Length: 211
Image (cartoon, rainbow, N blue to C red):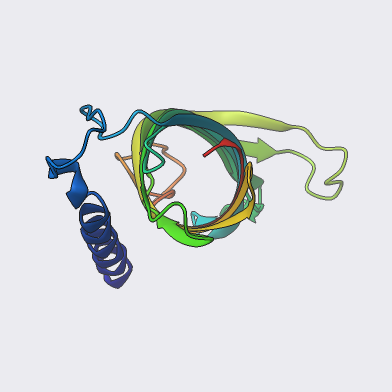
């Protein structure tokens, strides 16, 4: 729970800064055309990312990508997806298995003080996916073995996060992020934990585009 409170606190502070940055939206002493999003500036980006987490108590790797429309330098809307797998483990019958899957969905991402060389963003991902319980027959030959999915289940996911963005070049940003994954209950008979994906995730994102 401490991790959740920390994420919420950082998000609230970020939103407060965002609100202060945009107070001139209501200033009538300007000839600039105002829109629902506060500006006419638009951009876009594509990104790929890698992240570390624990899935069902085992180290896990996530690889994915996302892309979005940037409105007024300060808000991004877009779509993304990823795939993941965790390390091998053994069940009570000494059969080797791991968990693998993926999900996709939508991103909403306020960007705090985007013109500063180092700034914050607060991505929120909402989507759906599926996870499989994969068994391996030959535990002694890890490079030759082939896994078989013996059970799987779909789920919905929500993943808020906080990223520190570095403006490396005009069209390139490097982001270090921490996220917390929530999912609906995952019903796989072989697992006692019905929320194997839930928990903290740490990631590195490479963004390319017009910011």
